[in-house]
Length: 598
Image (tube, rainbow, N blue to C red):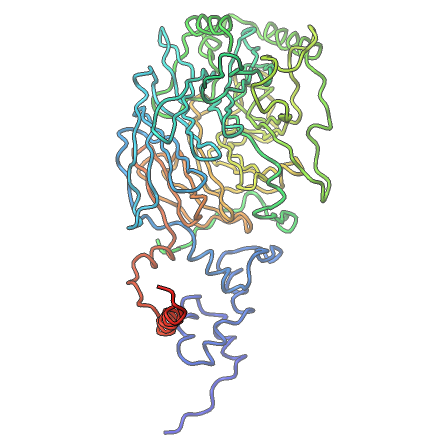
């Protein structure tokens, strides 16, 4: 029986528009005509917007070559398939950090160890390389780590247990050549964490209480190790001294190098998505499953204040000595607290170095940049961190050479001003930089709209939903959209840090709801939810391959996630070389023999 004429392309396209994408792909193998229609750009543009529920005002990713491939990227290249569970830790795993090459990563835990892992095994699995316990140095636990720029040193931050149950922080520097401990640096409060400024120098914190709710944060530049010449050269230098009011302190320092903006990973088109409401419910898609006097003063303050650490999670976001403040607040009248704040502001205004508006300013289009910013959380209304502070680090501050206390100051100028402040209007619980250092992503739990803070020791209640804000460090403003899907449940006084990470195309975060989350940075959508048995504290993308993601949890495990595409490639049998490649190889050998080469 002779077959009749085929359906016109327009009718086949109309039918495909009403089918799910899997059915379209299957139908495309029916015949050549249907295959051609199943790759139609208009068809996949419609399937893309409908499936991912993206507003039509959002353009296609600037690096995408077709709607079909863009759909496939979001569907097939998200690291959402669990391929391995690492169980070598014996307590809550708090933080993960990759080396810059991506060949190693480190993990910190309540078991007080920092472990190093190898990601380059031939079978694709991850294995433990080395484990160091910090208990012999009187640490309570390790909480943060970071590789230096050339992956030769590892910075490890932890909680140091002092006398009378007091706790401060300490930073250790470990050589990755022979795993020896090179130096230890005091760090107070412990949730400053510390960070690398360059290959050989790191930044740490110190805290001095001036009153019940007024303190001074000092940020120090430290040489990572002492060498033969250290007897004649400084190994530490004060960077900044900043006044804190209303029981706030500086925490979570990190360094952004703006010269990376010249080669951006992604330019976000926020204007096209400005109409999207922040209350939009997230959708999930099935993707295939210092000097000695100061140190003595600090020890005395520690003993008097009797600081306590939280054993369940990371340290709560209260400054060192906050228990002393809470216990004594009944005896301090509101009028006295207001008076202390007024006096602190007056003292700060008279004795703070005047800010230079040219140090931190939005960059003009095409302007070359070589700025280095120090970023940190801070506050001015209450002890919970609700602001991002930005301070520019000048070229002459990049080394410990020169005067120990930095440039000379007049007797009336002993505080440094902040160059720029961004208020998040909520409790900040996490920060992460994009690979190009262009965007700062901030996890926060919002305060109620219109709330007024009358008592610094009674911050507003915080939302269970976590907002992921995006701050453009080129324009120095918060963008008008935020990502939302993850949740947290602890109150203000028990809130702990949830580490997030950013790759070229994606951003990921942990949450207290026993899941990790992955969003696409350009389309502003949540793509995957990664399950654990307890709170997810940290996530980390491999800088060498964003289709590899790690997640760390209170369930004492580290889970390894790869994309469906990578899992499929790993499971596929090795293909024999193609015939024309074999022929080319044989011809090449014959030519070499004829030319007399061995």
